[in-house]
Length: 137
Image (cartoon, rainbow, N blue to C red; front, side):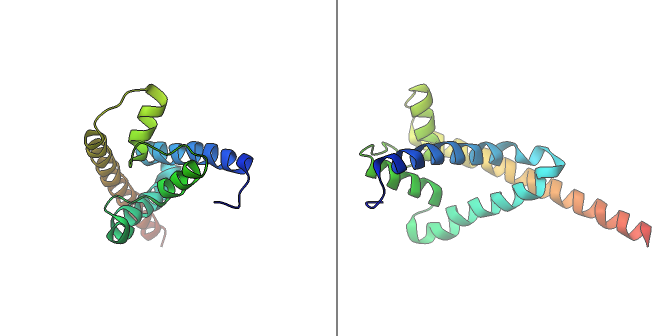
């Protein structure tokens, strides 16, 4: 990050803020539409991979997007005051300083519900498609 210009770091800060926030919104709502459901399943699996598999080495709940964004913010001299991206977002956008553990628990709960929904709905769609394919034969 040391080699990047100040304006590049500012761009990356905003990029991560927008991209990661949209990614989080997609994690919550992407299962709702047939056309985005499979992509939602893939992004949910990527999130789980980061949290659980990469978390073996970096700590449970590790997010590589958060890590990259924090590197950018550190290079800008704007050290984040949270380890959790959602906690950071809530604090930055509303000014509320909720307990980090509460935010983390809510994130796990919401993510788990959305992950179960996406698995269930993707399986239902897959079974319907298989049945339709067998009827055509």
